[in-house]
Length: 288
Image 1 (tube, rainbow, N blue to C red):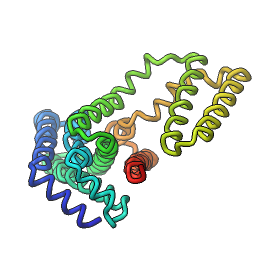
Image 2 (cartoon, rainbow, N blue to C red):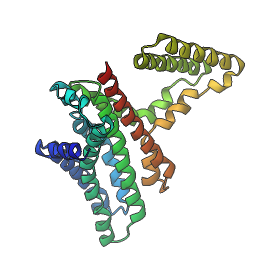
Image 3 (cartoon, one colour):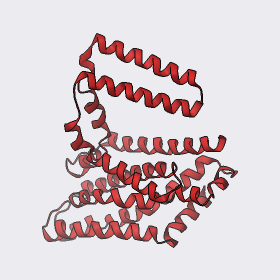
Image 4 (cartoon, one colour):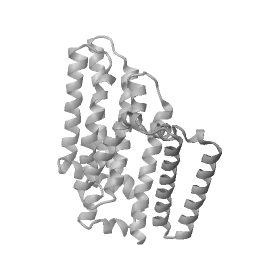
């Protein structure tokens, strides 16, 4: 894994993608820092950091698009699939290389609260905990981008799909106001999700009996519960989707001044989930 990590990290800086990525985030963060903290005298760097999140929607796809899509395009992924190195270590090595590149601007951000301290009042605990949450949020975005990159052989498609997915997650909090809250809409969404899960199980197992049985049992259970107590399905979809508003955890640190340990664990669980999904994608290709 160490060799793969070093190779990937070297490739990001020799191809200038890593340098441009880090420089872009440092410049954007510096602009917000200059406007809000230096010129306006706002004592929280976390407030300036909130503006950088939107830029991750465009910069992270550029960083993650080549992680696996380029391997598939150049047919070098066959070497990965037949390598004696465990697949988990290959994927983790690539992921850690991307997070290391992302850690460079985050490390530079750690200097900004000290500059604020030299100018007057500063809130170092809030600022540094916000930088930690910002870093983990970026790691979540990178894990999502890596997974989407593993699904295609086109780096452009990987970048566009990642950008779209991250933008949807970013806007999810506002979109919740337009989602139907009726019980029947909740039931329909549950049935659609069960169908999607069954389709995924079928693709992984190629066993129609298991997938069909899972979908049938799920349908019967959901409809039975709906007929017995419809109120359980009211506001079901918004209540579920609001847990996927990833930026809420960061804003707890940056704006509400709450050290959200559960939110950090939530970020880590999402990272593990998408690394696992990436592994399963290549496991399927290895044995197909």
